[in-house]
Image (tube, rainbow, N blue to C red; front, top):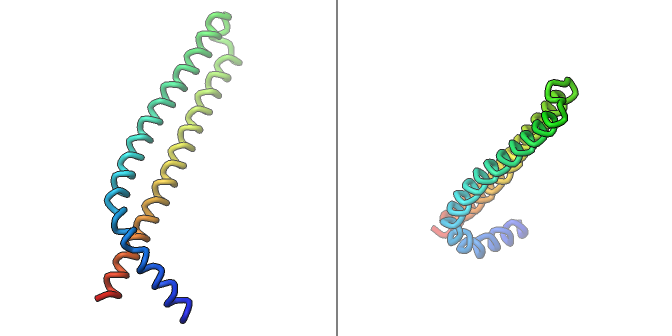
Length: 117
């Protein structure tokens, strides 16, 4: 019981900080979303450039219709799609974690209000 009271007291002391950061949490989430979109577009463009470079190398060597060239081009394209998907998943995980943390802070603030009433 003593530990619970100490934890609740610490939570109540820290809750004004949580309330002050709520507005900035939404701003940060919006900025992260914009950054993720820009990063995705950048990587897609970079990947397309690499794919076109490989195709042009194969064409210059006269191997554009070879099976090994088509396989390597397909493999590269698949690898880029995998990287993009992994990156999207990682970004979603980070954002979900941040949203969870924000909900926890809001819950602490609500709890403080209930306790002080």
